[in-house]
Length: 90
Image 1 (cartoon, rainbow, N blue to C red):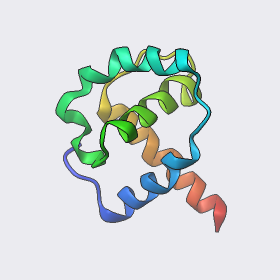
Image 2: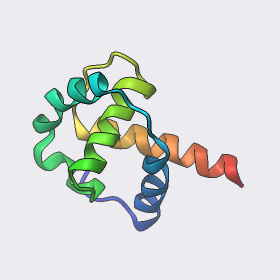
Image 3: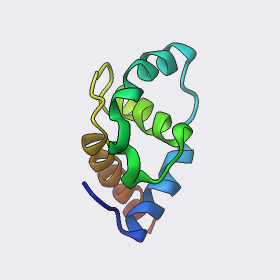
Image 4: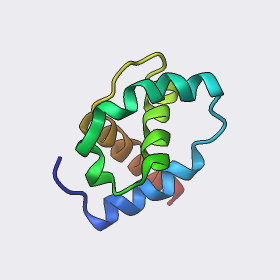
């Protein structure tokens, strides 16, 4: 995944702030995997906080107990979920 469109970015940017109330344990579990993503997070155009929120959402809400850390897979799941949220709101 090289680049997101403006609409895709807006969709994710609207969805991520709705993901709250992660526990400290969930944060630390995800943090152990976050650094592996490296430059793969660039298409998301989020700082570390947004990247961590995306990772925590994936590992603890989207696919609980997942150890997935690859940004491409997580960003694709975010796009699918955020698109569903937008279509549901219309």
